[in-house]
Image 1: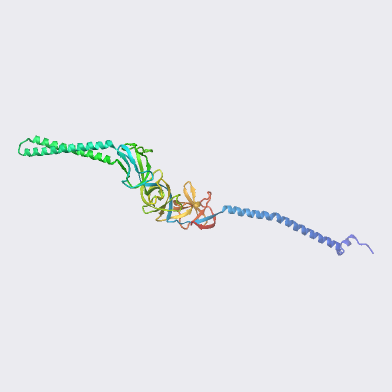
Image 2: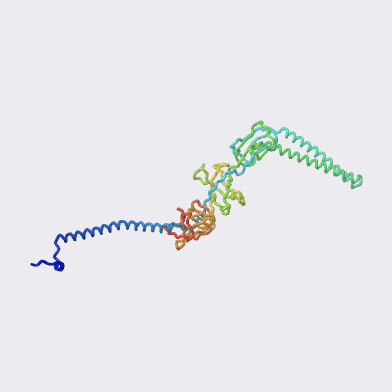
Length: 407
């Protein structure tokens, strides 16, 4: 048989592949697919976290651009407010008692803490010199009385004789003038007697009103002089000091913003640390009607009944004034206020969730809440706890809303 040429061999039909060749091809395909799968997994593991990180970063940037805020809605402020002020308790009447006549203390009858009535004798002063002066003045009065009677009768006789031309008119007028002079001398003597009698009556030192003796500065045998030097710290010459404590005065200084709300009909009561839980009913008696230019306050006097003697003059008390506003405005928590150089401001969120800075006027102060006199409406949404960086026109996202009512 003739062997085939190379051309003939290339054109001859292909022989079927052996099982070994097919197995090698299948293995190659599987390895290739596995490599592709591994490459895809590795590629996915590297790209997906980056994509997620970029998404998170974009969301964070968007969140930072859009501020999340909580808002409060203004509510009507209470009409009544308990204004608490410090007060100084003073006695209804307070007086220093001095001697009106000079002499020696013969006896004293009351000591500190004694309750006395008006006109009650506190001490007695021995004044022998004054008694002698009174006797001399009475003698002078009797002499002046006798001289006047004689001059008066003489003048009447001369007037009668003048009618019959028995004496001259000049002599009659002289007698009449002498009677008038004697009358003036009598009146002077009577006035001197009355003066000395008044001084003698001051031998008994009496209480000017019902009260309590708070100081006694006399001893038996001590020399006292008429008058004294009131106004000094040591009060030289003061015999006794008396205070009326059955009724007390309490003075408070009301701030200018609340001064117009305090009237004589304002409800008021007192509290003290000595009596926890006890209320002392009082009443507004009067006010100075003048604002102190230094403290910008109004001086108000409050009267309180103290018949049981519970309160003591000079004590410290807390005065509660129940003020009533005729037209209460809106109120907001203090945390919603912004204190800017141009005034107090609040941040209001409009219907498009855009910030608007609005100036307001503060009225009454309730502690954690304040009354907004002007600048707000009941439907405004006010940002609570706004940051200092908040600005007008800034877009925000409202997280929650609540009212400004107190708990």
